[in-house]
Picture: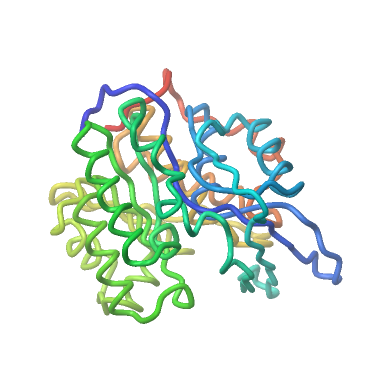
Length: 320
């Protein structure tokens, strides 16, 4: 990894229209998507970020782009597909704040990003960036042929000196079967420098008996840093044989765990980019996630994170 490389972080994936209920049956429309959530929280931490996706030419896509720009997320690599509209999902949460998703996303324009050539400009200009961030959901968007193009893009990014970060973020209904998902995740784990799995996903797909076992398995693929998220138990970080467990911050009023992992990723990557060691970066991730789950929806009000600070002289780009 080039710890001195400058340039924005590129986050590649899908953003959808989000419908969230407030507990009384009232519905609020906003937007969200795992990689977009992380990109936006990174931008709030002062990290130069570009979002790479495909939207439609509809008013909802216009609203998304305007909102991202207002948050400081770059949109130079957001393509627009004529006649298309973004995907949509609805969230329902239980009394403990745990969420359940319902999706309408199968015709979203991002799903033909590589087949329609929308990624070509980004691929040609990959050298402008410091890092590439993507997720298991990103991988699940594409058919086998397009997924090969994405693997090639990530490999080229690494060869060009970018650091690559990958959150496994498994959604079973996005895959034909578990074997397909495991093969894709293992392939991406061999490319990534930084892996950000959730332990629940590791047990579901790999039967890992402990967070450390999950981290050691993934590190064996070649990742330099593995941060395993395990909800109320916090996070564990594995790096070149060193292991540390970082407890979660207690939260008495968890309302909605949507984007808990995505915001942890932002805090963790933001900490690394600010020069913090991985254990301290994990504390920053836990702190941001604790803030986020006290609000409804994937993207919480900007004022709720306005005082969040990672000590930094960050000016656009390096991970340690």
